[in-house]
Image 1: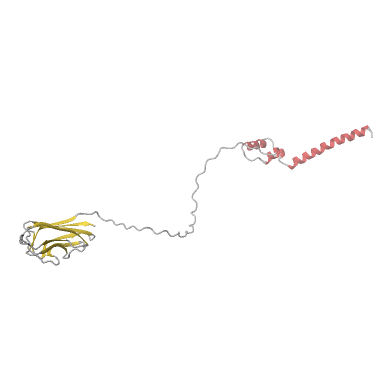
Image 2 (image 1 turned 90 degrees about the vertical axis):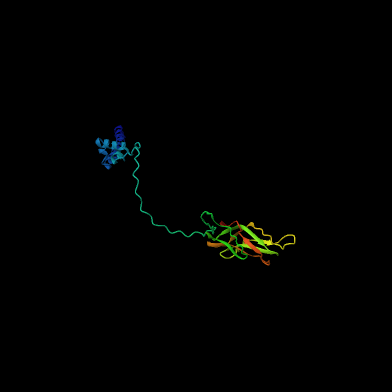
Length: 255
């Protein structure tokens, strides 16, 4: 080969790669029609968009290939509270629980405070010489049925006889002797006299008949003092309330 032909061949090999590169560049620019317009005002606009943190435009992406992350903005304020939602539907009723244990029964009784209730009947010189019968009575108003009555008779009593004798002074309530628990009574017994002592001696002494009676119903109660005989003994000559004051005292007491 002549020297001239060798030089022409070397120039052709060097020029062919440059042409291929130019074609590839030309094809790339023709593929993106916006590539030539990414300059001037469009480039400035795209640059402002990138600095504000917004997404890059297609033009800027073609030129630089990616977006740069800008600084974080100022946090926003909390929004207004939302309105209440629609009420839900009622749930399914629950089942009955287990039966509890039986409680303790306490019976409370509320009563008014106790008020004193009493009465006195008095006589001056009764001078009752009877041996059998009622001596004196006193009507009393009993307030409660569950209370007790305390009764007292105070006066002079006397008994005389030639032979042994016995007399009994006792209370009645509405005409009947006390049965709760037993009668309220007192007795005087006089033994047979002796030749040295006169058994007919006449002595009057102040004595008392006193006790409690339960079971008397509430309301008016006729409380009376009687004189009678002792069981299995003859009666003597009795006297009550001679030449002195006699009295009946009645008092209602709580049980």
